[in-house]
Length: 177
Image (cartoon, rainbow, N blue to C red; front, side):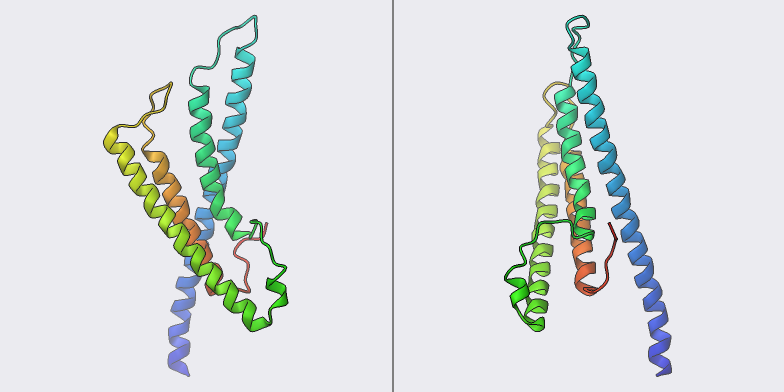
């Protein structure tokens, strides 16, 4: 019994550090998402104001900036939404199952979600590599955009870790909304 207790303490410390680190990354991505939405609002408002008849100077590249910020905001909000279970769930049939059936279905769905987001992360990185190889840029400002799929891939990889956390700790909320 002493040996298992001696092994459990470092394992719990590593698990706690991992949980804190993952939470920190999720909150950091949430801050990026919020800043992105705020920037979209500011760029859109500036573009509308600058298009007034007496100013008549549209915000050059507003469409490019909003498009990039929209993709980043959406992707960086995925880990937080997953952590707080803010997704849409249809649980009518789920609640008709017995406890063991719910555990099996929930576990299978979480594993499938991890596989899906791992695939999305991998394909996003490959897409970014294609963008980099071909020199893909935005339409108006000619900004390189190869890094946007990299960020999307990173966020999808974090979703895999968040779903893995909820698979390992099904009764514990990772983040409370």
